[in-house]
Length: 62
Image 1 (spheres, rainbow, N blue to C red):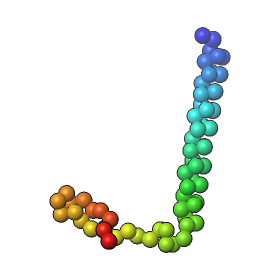
Image 2 (image 1 turned 180 degrees about the horizontal axis):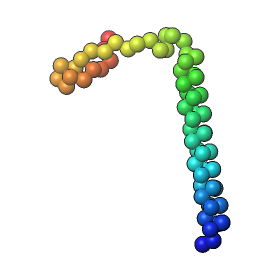
Image 3 (image 1 turned 120 degrees about the vertical axis):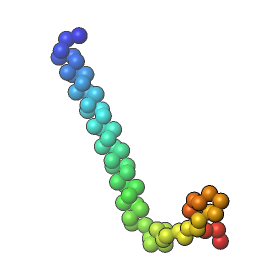
């Protein structure tokens, strides 16, 4: 395979990877921005209690 073709395919692949990473970064930042803009009621802490059997912390019932 000619070296120029290998370099061109590598550049094309790198550009595709960068495009995917940029799109994912924008999606995550948009979700974080929506979360930051949410009212404080949406973001209030959930009280936890420890499950005596497993030792895991779970949201308090009731």
